[in-house]
Image 1: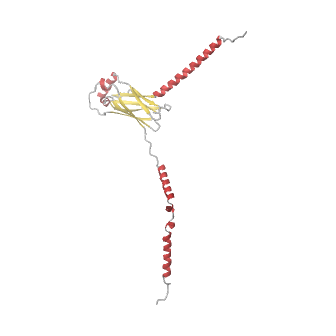
Image 2 (image 1 turned 90 degrees about the vertical axis):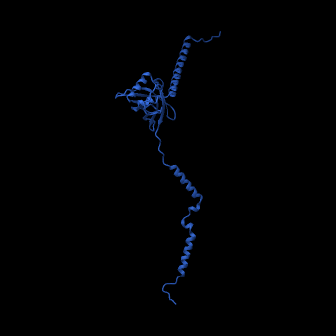
Image 3 (image 1 turned 30 degrees about the vertical axis):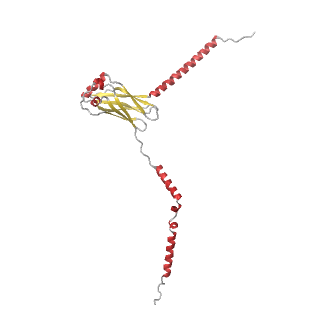
Length: 248
């Protein structure tokens, strides 16, 4: 009689546990890769803070975020919060007493591909609060960086920039920011024109090589004139009478 092997129940349980462990590990790795991919696409966020100053007290709060997106070139976008009713009332109160509208950003590198590096302190800039109100929250933010991409300065201007006392409706004109964001990096100085000089030198050398007549020396060029002058001097000296000769 032929007998067949029978799988025990313990072996089946072990295989099921092994498959479950492998599935759990693969799921963890998958979700980790997805999280990193989403984080790279969204970019790194840097807080943009504002303060309404009508006295010597400065209290900053969040206005939005600078989003640093990865890439070969600096790519910075701005995500801003909508003004609440309380924010609009406070802004108009500070504008009425000719207070200031301050912004603040941390000193960080704008290179998202590098390791995040934040230095001590913040960079600030300000405009008159009345200009911010009368521009209907239309401003231009400029980020200044050094050659390595580290933020070294920030500036803000409103469009238009004058305070003329124009009445502004809270609900319509002071709700959403209309911001233009620019990044200013230093321009590299022009280098010496060594390559151009060497190219011109090679061209001159090639021209001289093609025209060997220009390479001849002075004697090679004017030998016939020198020879004619020497013969003329010899004939002149032989035609002259010897000194002390008798006269007839």
